[in-house]
Image 1 (cartoon, rainbow, N blue to C red):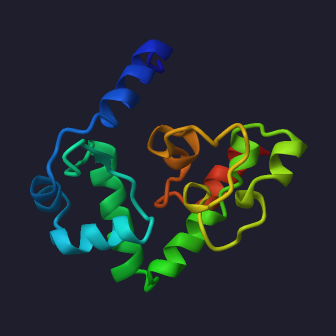
Image 2 (cartoon, rainbow, N blue to C red):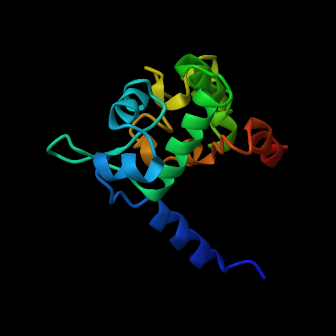
Length: 153
């Protein structure tokens, strides 16, 4: 029997709660801290940022780090390849953007950067925190882009 919606939502929120420092995240993911900084700088990961500019990471971030590492070291992608893969997710479909919003948003036409990296966002996303966005979390790199597209069809 599937979990109740409230319990499932609670688990999703708990998995996204930022609790780990960079050093702990590096240990948990088995990835050097400098690599994690590169992933952040290249737009592959959006960690929680404290007022002191220190980053905190969630359990979901740890999973995402492991998947990015796999794509780079086992699948042979570089940062641009991972970004392009992430850019394939049709954010406008997941967010149900209007045609007007799509026309004013670079994410609709940008092929090589995920929506959270584009400079001009539509009115629906303009003031949102991309770290908390369903699009950012919808991308299951391990299952692949096709699994995301299948949910939309």
